[in-house]
Amino acid sequence: MSVVSPTLILNEKQIAHKIKRIAYQIYETNVREKQIILAGISEGGFILAKKIKSEIKKISELDCLLCEVRLNKKNPLAEAVETSLSEDEYREKSVVLIDDVLNSGTTLIYGVKHFLNVPLKQFNTAVLVNRDHKKFPVKADFKGISLSTSLSETVQDSFGKPAKVELI
Image (cartoon, rainbow, N blue to C red; front, side, top):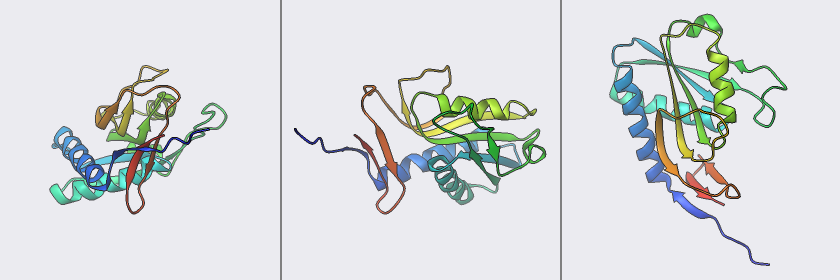
């Protein structure tokens, strides 16, 4: 029985570069806005949203409000989607829904569905890693890297020290 070691996809420096590029893209798309909502899906997506907010603050005066999105990733219909902001706080605002890895699209599409219950000015999605095995017609408007992988492979990220993205 052989043990397959993980393949490094992105190292800490590369992740930082991808996050910076995503931040610029989000800013360019929202340059006329006074405030935007960065809605990160727990856990990895919310960590990524915080990092993107930090980068946007370095390049602009744009006010970024963080919103944590909590949902059951294994069974999104089992529990209601919850957000750390009320609907009134993101009503008629520009919202960017953020997740770390777009695998099948299940998590992202149920996150999108939640925000469509409220009138928004603009809505975009962002992911660090975009995989090409979607069950749902959802896409990432801003992505760090796209990977063509097999269904049996897993993309794992770590935002610790050192930050890394691996293919297992």
